[in-house]
Length: 252
Length: 256
Image (cartoon, rainbow over all chains, first blue to last red; front, side, top):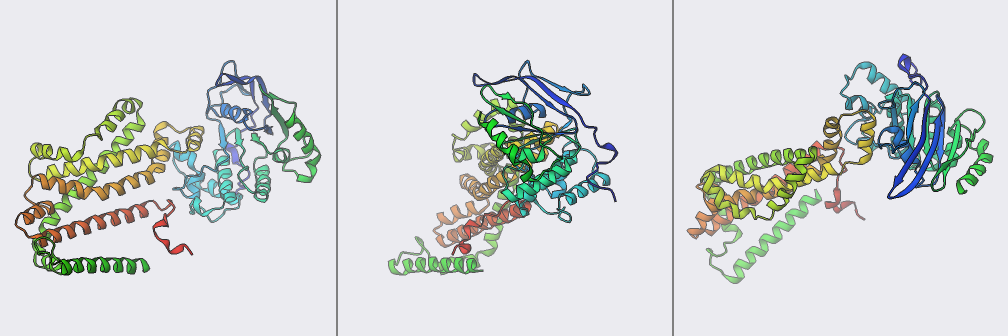
């Protein structure tokens, strides 16, 4: 029996990623210019900021969903372009209602028209079990609660097994308790991967991330990193002191 | 069950009112035959009605299939290719300004008195609601799904077939429901303009001979067709799209 947390011999090596001199103009306004952000390989980097500051756009640039404006440069530690090497998780679960949970988790392989081998299916089953949904592979998303649906989305993200995981406020649509539980789960399952977590919840960033950056102002700037002590996922009580500091930086 | 009883009660009341009007006003039976007389005509003329009903049913079914197939293909073409959208979409919208019924004489002239002109008529009527419904559905795909598919490395064709088309199926289903409701109109209009068989033909024929009871019987058969067709298509679509939340709003049993 293999451990679904371990992704086997195909597990990608942690990849360091950086975005430099990023510029974004929307409707004649410069949202940011000359912005730098480095994602350390194998670490979870949190990016906090108020709505509309441009943090989601930054994530979409890395995901290849938006075209970067010159002179923006996206660099990787191994100098291979990032295209096709990211897994993306959004605020909405984005589960396809007509597919079963198992088919949703293996969506990437279906969309790339890859052969659906027994290994692939077993890995998907293992991931569903790891997020606490064993035995529900044949269910449809409509029969799940919001928290359960986001668990499936997490399993689908990990199924892609990409060197860089991009998460855009993945838990912000959930109630407080469900959110805490899912943060614990995500913190465990994302260990060892390079992750960019964009969020507007300071506590979430402080619980889950190795380093936390605050993005604020117009044009926006990214502040120096905060390094919460200890490995994630952290106890909410342990980061309360830092919580106040982050709120101060966000308001600046 | 309660719904069935309620429908039966409604039908009984309507029939009673109809019979009441006939008794009270004493209109001659060639103007308004009573329900009993129509029932007798239904029974007596059953072989004739069946013959013409089958004819019309074939026209409706063929028109429905052709119209849905053509409409689906057009919507896919429109959403898949930008030039198609630029050139054909305005044409499609303008073409709806032409009343399709006005084309019926032309269709009979071109395609003859047989079944082809009626099928063409039904197809024309069905084509537009199906095309617009599916095209609308394809346009309204959740952008998040498309983003997700793109980060997964899906080709545009895979996004269309595996994400956008399944997501648009409920929209196509509402288009097909509308199509099922209007298909009989197309066939009957075609028959009125010129034909030698079908319920529309039978109604004109009976009308000319003052056989108003036969006319009403044909009308009853046609109405039964329309209702059965709609209900059948609706049930089929519900079964085909089980993930679609059942809109039980027609059934008010759940309200306190």
